Image (cartoon, rainbow, N blue to C red; front, side):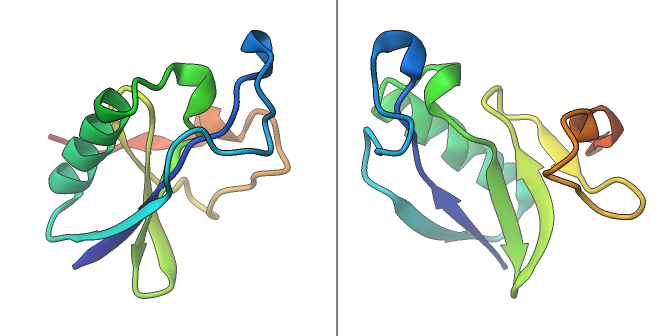
Length: 99
């Protein structure tokens, strides 16, 4: 069982406050990573979100982050050594999950 938290942020390119959500935050449980990706895409479509409004979604198993899901619905597994959100090139080391 996985837990995801779906949320949005304002896009400053459109004069929106990046510290304010533009859609309600939702926490849901799913059985598979594929279901998590489908929930992400459904949330994006439902709330008409653009890429600048959607931070990557963290996927939790218990309290551990086991994957991320990007705007396009791709599932990313952590690189060796884990994620480093303070490194702007960290995303280059993410591993796309096999289908």
